[in-house]
Image 1 (cartoon, rainbow, N blue to C red):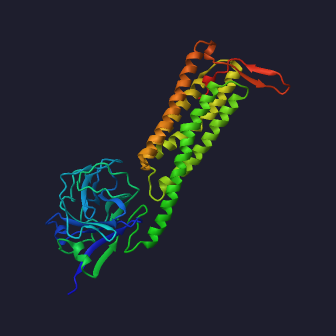
Image 2: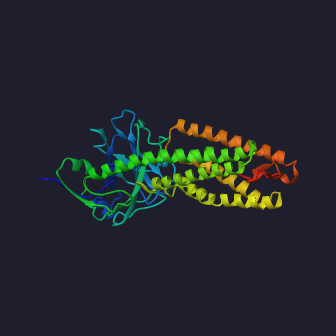
Image 3: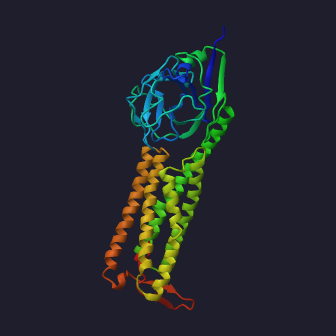
Length: 413
């Protein structure tokens, strides 16, 4: 007699990780709380995660990764606390079942969970047709740890959410339904309603190919985004400010303006790349790095106008004004935040330690040099009338020299 497994909900994300859920008859009727689920994906993935809830915070998360031997998997139950590595949940009642392991290029975990109905920070109704789940995957070398509390798991490459209709996942009383499924040819399955870029069905070759193309574009866009933003905030913005304080020649103010405008043009280009990265293939626009980046770039629109107002007021009054101070400190604060946000971007993109150190050293040297020059200029200008620090010569058409006495270099960010 051919065994037919009932009530398996199948959902597959575009990176070939597969998630299945089964609610036994006894659980659906309320006489027990056990449910079964399977997490499966390529062994080229560093870890695979599935969680109950609609966001990381307060979610009930299950992660799998290679154990010490590299031939079996470690199941790690965790509690989501936000956009950071979830904490190990020692109170979770979960078991790895037969059929779990790493073989033929696949990492598989067949799991029984006896604490998934209520995990403290949330709960789930196993008779609901609209249950919320999240998923995430991370590529890279195997973790190779048999500790379920292993710390140091890197940020996911991609993530998304799923909506499981558990009314069609009801059925059977097997103590290991997915091992039973593998041994039979008849399987009843039902598509879920995944969101983000997850798709459902029994195969995903086309989706995987499409995802690979997007991922390659995303990797190139991430490199370009980091390069232009690093050039703008860690180099050109500080350099433009340093130039106007160190040198003194006719037209210096326009060299400063040109340097800052080139930096801002690069920042706009980097913003466009960043928005595309944050939306493809999965939404990451709500992370602190893109949010902070959008705020900084938007606020920087005002900076050139503050500079022009300062310049024109100084030409008329020959002394610093409110606009001078506003231009200086507005620029200093925003550019400093932009430099810090570059480090957050490296963290989000899971850059190498060497890359993070390299950016920190270059950005740190430029920022310290910029501040040192600014402080030196402030101290020198304090001894001059009106806080002025020198003079700028502008050549007139007829060859005469029109000097603007004491044009404050400290009036430029």
